[in-house]
Amino acid sequence: MKGRRKIILAVAVLLIVISGSMLLWDYLRQHESEKIYEELASQVEETTETAEEAETEEEYVSPINFEELWAINEDVVGWLTIPGTVIDYPILHDPESNETYLYEDIEGNRTSSGSIYLDCDNAADFSDLHNVIYGHHMRNGTMFKDIMKFREQDFLEEHQEAYIYLPDREIRLRLFACLYTGSDGIRRMTKFDDEETFQAYVAEMTKGSSAYIEPEQDVERLFSFVTCSYEFDDARTILYAYEVTEDGGETEGEEVTESAGQETAESAVVSE
Image 1 (tube, one colour):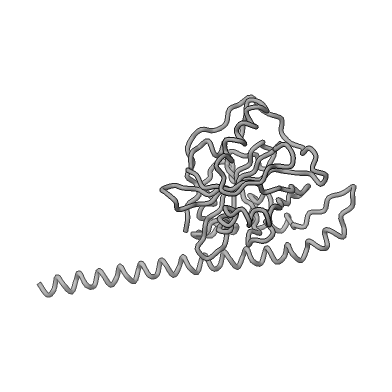
Image 2: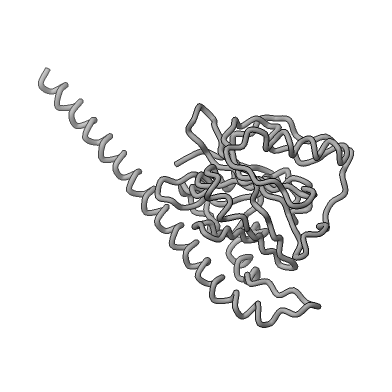
C-alpha cells in the first residue's frame, strides 16, 4: 500500500514538473515574441520620419521596410497602427487557413499570443469590400486587448484613426463602431451581390454597438478587428472601421461582385 502511494506521489510530482515546464516554456516563447514585435515596432518609428520627409505627391514612400519583414516571413501583407493603443503590429496572411497564425508569431515560433492576421478568405491586398483582421486578447495587454477599450463611447470618440501601411500605399481608416457579439460566420462575409446588399450588411453588423459614431461618408470599404470576449461562450469583440481618403472622398477598391459571402462559422480567434 505504501509502495502504491509512493508511486502515485511520484507520478503527481512528475506531472506538476511537466506542467510547470510547459507553462515556463510558453511564457518564455511569448516573451520572446513580444520582444520581436517591440523591436519591429521601434524600427517602424525610426523610419516613419524619414519616409515622411522623402514622400512627394508623385511617389508614396512606405514607413515600413517590407523587404526586411519579407526576409523574416513572406506572409507579411501590411502593418497595422492604431494611435493611442499598443496596437502596432505587422499583419500576416495565409490564404489557405486561419489556423496558421493563431498560435504562431512572425518568425514561426509557437506562442499563445500568435500574430495579427488577415482572414484567409480575404485578398492579401485588402481590396475586398470587407476585410477581417484577427488578434488575441492577451491578459498582459498586448496584441488586440486594447480593442476592448473601444466599447466605451468616450474612448472611441477620442481615438478615431487607424492606419494600415502597405508597400505601395497607406490605408487610412476611421473607427466608428464597437460591440461584442457571437462568432457567427456572417461576421466574416467578404463578397456581396450588389451595393445595396453591402450597405445593408454594414448596418446589420454595427447594429447594437455599445459605442458608435455616424460615418462622415458612405462606407465604401469595411474593416473589422476581431478579438475574443468573455460575455458568453465564443463571444467576440469587434471594432469596425471604414476607409477614407485625405479629402474624405471615394476610395479605390474592388467592385461589388456577384458571389455570395462565406456563411460558415469561424472561431479562429481565442483568448490567452
